[in-house]
Image 1 (spheres, rainbow, N blue to C red):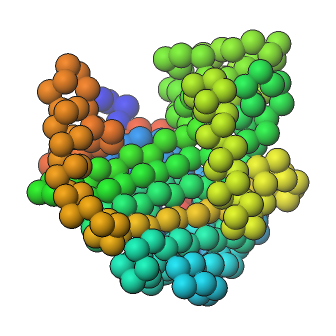
Image 2 (image 1 turned 60 degrees about the vertical axis):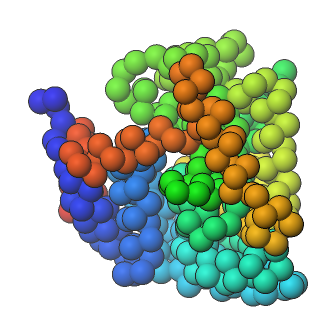
Length: 338
């Protein structure tokens, strides 16, 4: 514990906002991203929280991403919103589209928001959770930098291509989960390397093309394995279609511009789908969700997907979070350079 410092969630958010503002972000955009950083520290995985700030800063400092993006949202069909992120971060565009997306879903039963010309870092669940809190079922996908080899392959084709799902749960917090298409998310591999420990299972290929749990070897080859072998690779394909192809974002392999700027992410595509269960004809929808969850809870060590974050959330809200002093020193240096 001597190597960490305890911060309240308010202090985490204030630190994140200060650093983001120092890079030239405007008040609104920095609020959106600072909230995501704080919520990641609160809920986990914390690899998506304060540790992401250097990558945000680098993308702005290199001129790769627009710190003062003003996204535009256009309704192009009765239930479809199309966004242009103005070369900023997707979450800012999604935040701007949220109320219209909710209204369209309630009007039509289902609605979708796609966005291109945008960047993405962090967890997707912070885009689906607000929709579930509004009583909707939500699915979000985004494609990312090519790091994942197709099953049986040797060369990355897909990104870690995350997805998130959320649905309302009567009398309790919504069910919310997100996951990468890779065995382990890139930021968790970076975190393991920084902390000097191996991964819990082989998650990528070494220089000889063999599966390995050594995070340094995986970061050297930048070749991650999909979860569930061919099944995870199929999910990554699906997200490449729903994310990049549907939205018109860059494919995961098209990262020449990213390489020129030394950035971590590409300008991929994102799709967010919202469904109003009250418009689908099953008046017992809430009962179904309660039944599904009750069949899982108390079933050995099983838990409802994503519910581990609720325990993390309660602890962090009450006790704060322990942040590496090395990371805090790095962030202080970033702020002084801003």
